[in-house]
Length: 174
Image (cartoon, rainbow, N blue to C red):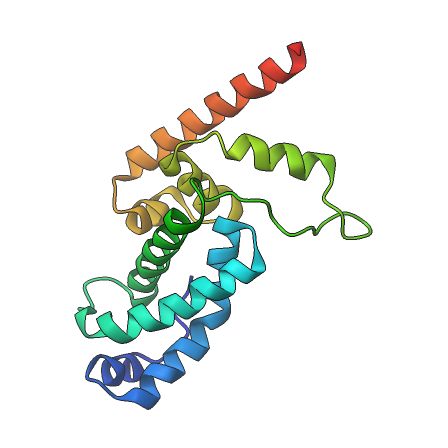
């Protein structure tokens, strides 16, 4: 997620200016919804999560301290809210997604298989895969967003690839 709001507007929102807060949320809304959708695979859940992010931001924006980019701080809020939402609804953040991608809106067999395989990753492996391979972040950016070392992200990706490779090999023998 990239910075899309002037830092002066962010400073006003942190100070309690309601119009500035609304401007920030509207500017980031699509990014928030897309991040949630990538994690939960359902548009209705992504909308609920975006609404919950709005509420949480309203309660916590005062805590933003410019030690990191606002987008990085917001990303962590979105991941936290998504995790809380998923815990209440399902056991793992890869539920049945809405169909998309096939020629007539149906999921392809590859999308179905990939979704099923991703369900078997640990939450950390899943998050690293989404950040690096789906959202296009570098390992360093993913480390900041996940709150861990860059080497840890590399480890999660290595383990995810190994796990997925093993699962694919097992499917070949079935």
